[in-house]
Amino acid sequence: MSAWNVVFLKEVRENLRDKRAMVSTFVYGTLLGPVLFAGLIGMMISVMLERSEKPLELPVIGSENAPNLVAFLRSQGVEVQKAPNDPEETIKRRDADVILRIPAAYGEQWRAGKAATLELIVDRSQQKAEQSIRRTERYIQAYAGQTTAQRLIVRGISPEVIQPILVADVDQSTPQSRSGILLAMLPYLLILTVFAGGSYLAVDATAGERERQSLEPLLINPVSRGEIMFGKLVATYAFAAASLALSLFAFSIVTPMLPVEKIGMIINFGLKQCLLLFVAIVPLGLIGAGLLTSVSAFSKSFREAQTYVTLLIMMPAIPSMIMALNPLKPADWMYAAPLISHQLLIEQTVRGEPAVFWQFAASVGVTLLIGAIVAFVASKLYHREQLAISA
Image 1 (cartoon, one colour):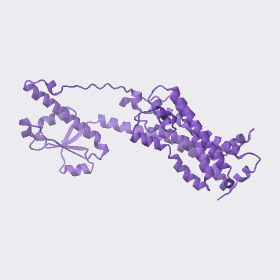
Image 2: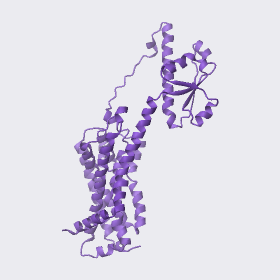
Image 3: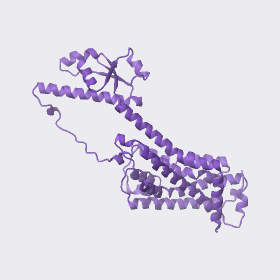
Image 4: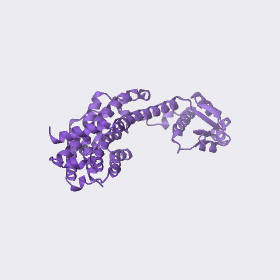
């Protein structure tokens, strides 16, 4: 058995024996993410359905000034309520999402054929109220359009005169591609799993052993430090890959439970999608293992290494944040850029777009090449004499 293989089995066995580390890696870090993700998405869908199906409750001030408008709102299922004494304060206290105020001059303006003014008292900084505001605006616009058509017909004018162009929405999206909106956080969670899956082992295998003064006896063996480092790196990579596989398995179980079909979406997260995502993402684990091992070898203590690793794990969030704030059209060169290529491949797979071989090959090839370079840097750090010296 080769030296690096012995070190690999040693690190795996020791990590498996650490129950706290196993629970932190495979339960809190890997399984809790999909469960929380599914729970949040499910709650969001429930809120959306409840608000869209629930009758709109609309307090109206001055309903006697526009009886026809109030009757139209009731015919659309709106629950017209008595207006509060202080509507502005009611909105500020969030006791109502929107309040309609009909001024006394409304009837006079209406009879004169002028544009009658209505007031919507709202607080658009409250995201919870946005859907109620939009629904109220749609009802008022529908009433305005109906009234406009009636006025034109009375004057012998076709309503089509004021609407010379009709826009037909030819939607090219599919129920599965629309699900990408809900799964926008999936790329970040999967990439984070690869980085975090082997973080504890990487820190403990170098910085931890140095603090426990068990690294020096290992290094004085007649084995090259490169092989020792390689064994520890492969063990870190193995746990990262296992975390990714377990996370994908968890997502494949929880996503079919989401009631997305009620909002016109489909999530297809089967075996084929899991395999494609695993092939696309698992090479990133080599970069993560190399960076984690390098940081652990560079740090002077276990606590210092943990601090650096915490900052390092935030790296996967950078492309997700950039592409969320400034969506980019995919270009060919992006599939040769780690993290960006993984973000694109995950989104395409989730949206149900066909897998393109060269895109996967470019991402995997470049990622493995950079991972090999990072591993070489980690090997150089392992050859430092200060490595075995405890702080």
